[in-house]
Length: 149
Image 1: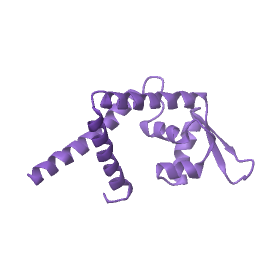
Image 2: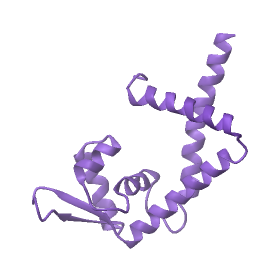
Image 3: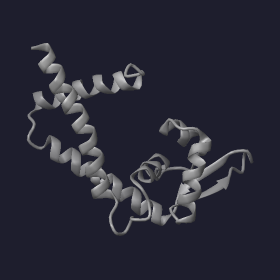
Image 4: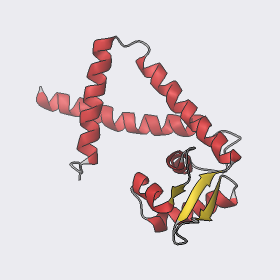
């Protein structure tokens, strides 16, 4: 029985990961945003729409090096999605903000996630919602703490 449950859970997790990534790519990368990738959308999401963010802070949120992030930033800047400027307080720090085009992509991406969550939870009762939150929280902790390595 345990092996059967393990197999089912493994299949569900693998399929869920692939299905979410596929659905997101199809929904987010539209004709308007065909010049960027799903990964680029996640970078724009990490930059956000609030105050300018430093490259190191964005890299930390995305769990990548500043060098890796710089390559993507160069492309996104050329395409008009973001701007980079030196901090007036510390010239070593590069601050990133979204342009109007970048903000539009940000809200488009956010809309996909809101619609996805709404669709997932609309038929759940409160007990199912709490169970889902608890289970996903445990999965998040497992992967965040590096237990999957």
